[in-house]
Length: 199
Image (cartoon, rainbow, N blue to C red; front, side, top):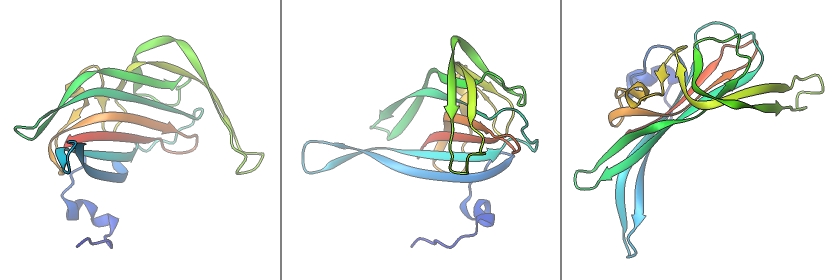
């Protein structure tokens, strides 16, 4: 029977999840079995894939630059060995990455390969009234990212640099799928990580 009334302050002690050092805001873990239709009356069960999404503060410094967002994705092929019930994650290269052209108020992040073109990003909402700020920034795009601001650092140039040891759920390593960091003036930047793992 599920226990729905758990205090978040007891999360690490109650669940056995082991997070690396840092100030984490939220943790979401899901497990899904991939089923395939055999064409008959039964569904064939495949690998069980887990996902872990983490949000964390990036240090303690208030961001004072222009608003923006940076992010990257890593490309993994998934191969399932049904005879051993094992799912393999095979690193297949650096994916699309982006960051604001003016990122002077935030250090420890860079693109590994930069495309020559730039993209204009506009975002406006009058929900808070006509005196609310809107965003008008130029975005740099490329492939791959090196991130050293924490709490989890990585370099997408190879698979081992995007892999973390097991954090208490599932089996085997955790594979970084997506990353983004939100840069809001007057606030501490927030990093968002998405991992996949073999459950």
